[in-house]
Every structure is written in C-alpha cells, then in structure tokens.
Image (cartoon, rainbow, N blue to C red; front, side):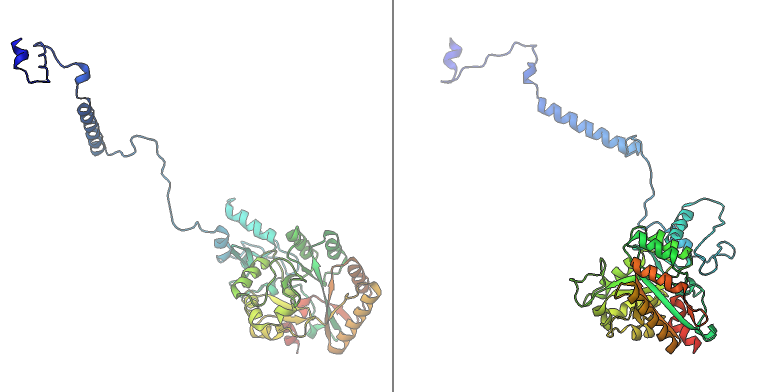
Length: 388
C-alpha cells in the first residue's frame, strides 16, 4: 500500500523481473545482430578475393583473341601476290579462262580462287571489292580489253579485204535466244550481255567457251527517263559522281571476262561531260574498252575516251530497227557498203530470234574474199591507229 501511495499519479510502478532470468526471445536486438552478420560476410568476401586472386570465382572460362582489324581477305592476298612461273596455266586468248593451282594443300584460298574462275575473270585481273570482283589492270600492265580479246586479223593484215564487226546486244535476259546466239552465230560475232539476267555467269562463260568475245551493257539515262527506264542501277545525269560510280561498280561486278562496255540507251547521260567523265575515267583505270552504239549525235564519248586512253569504237548502224528479215538483210548490205568505202564498219543487232537467225544466214553467205567478219576488238581505236 505504501508503494502505491509513493508512486507518481497516473503511473504504475513496473514490476521487477525475478533475478536470474534472461531476455525474452522477442526482446533480442535482431537489427544489430543482422547488421553485424552482413559486415562479417562482406569482410570475408573481400579477404577471399585479396588472398585467392581468382575473380572468376572458379567458374569455367574460355579465352578468345580479340583484334580491331579485319581478317585478311585470302582472295585479295592471293590475287595481289606475284604468281610464280608455272603455278597457274593461262590459256591462249579466246580459248576461255582455265586455271590450275599447284598448291599441295586444299585451303580456303583455293575455294575462293575457284569462285573467281566461275566469275569468268583471270585472277590477276580481278580486284575484290564489297560489290564483288571488279576488272583491273594486272601488275604486269596487262589490260582486260587485251586479255579477253579474240585473236583476229587486223586492218593491216587483212590483205585488202574489208572488215566488219557486229555486236549482238541484250543477251542474258532470255535463255532461249541467248543460247541460240551463242550456238548458231560465228565466233567472230561479239556478244553483249545485259547485267540483269539469271545465270549470267554461266551464259557468259558459255559464250567465251564457244569463242565469242563478250561485252557488258551499261544502263545510262535517256532524255525521257523515267518513262523510258533502262533498268536498275541506271547511271543518271545531275547526280553526285560517287553515286554513279557506286552503281558502276555494281554493274561491272555482274560477270567477268569481258573486253569492255557499251551504252544501253543513255542519250542524256552521254551528252553530259560532267556526268560521263568520271565513268570514262574509271573505265580507263580498269583497262576496259567502250563502244558507243551510235544512236546519239550528242554523245561526248569519243572525246572522253581519247582523254582517258580508253580504246573506243562507234557503231555505224543499228541493223534491226525494223525487226523483219528483209529489212535486216538490207541493213547488212548497207553495212557492207560502208565497209567498202572506209575499209571497216561496225553494226549492232538486238537479241531477237529473227535478228539472230537472219545474221546467221547472212554470215554463212558472206564473201570472204572481199569481207571478213571480226570481233569488235579488231576495230577499236588503238588497233586502227596501228594500221594507219
């Protein structure tokens, strides 16, 4: 009673715990205990890393070398190196490309060289690019227009006979007519392929195998573009030179083994020296010839070809503007007359069945005592200059 009277008002005196009794479980300082355990665990990890020096913690690892430079291009290395005599057998011109490598080991390089062989180009005349294999001048100065030319009589060795070259254009788009042209026309007829055909590498290779000299067509902008569209990757006037060169590289990589290129359409493009000049310069750098189809009198191709040392020719006539047998024969007679007057003449013919059959018939009856059918390379400016 005395204790209650002595206590402050509103409070009750706490009852004292009996001596010898510990804290209840729910009264333990769990927060401090957890913090202490965490500190001890962290200290243990730091000590382990410092003493053991194994940051991977025993996990299985694998090491791989890392380099910031691209892996060397095996094809570029193989093509760019000097080829020892006897390692590669280069066939006679006109017999079609065939390469034999004598390396003893079968490597990736050999497989890539086989890919170039399929492309139809001599390995030493190929530059590997992001666009594909591009023609180039060999380290020894050999140019594609020389390497892939079909051997032929020149004006100086013709013995007074008149020389006629005919180029069949638009091949590769129709398999049937392309095969007919390859098989039925004389080997002296030059065959020009569009860059879009399916199986272009195979058909171009077949043409060379049959002895034909081959060329590649370049789609160039006409005045009525895009109503009259030559096709994808057409080189356009008033475009940055780099854009047109990128298109040119894509086109040049479609096949190999060709002596040069000719225009497909392109009256507007070939009339613009500013646009055409970088293209002609590139052809000169790569050792290619150029044929102007003769359809535009405004073409500056002759001047640009001369300035860039590009072997050049200009067609005298398109022989099947009227695609009928009688009209084509009449045009061929006119080509003979032109050759008689000047000593040589060049005609173009499209890859139409009637055109191919008529040309085959005409060539079989050509008087070889007066005229000779020759590949286009025999009538390029450099060959004509030698004859004068």
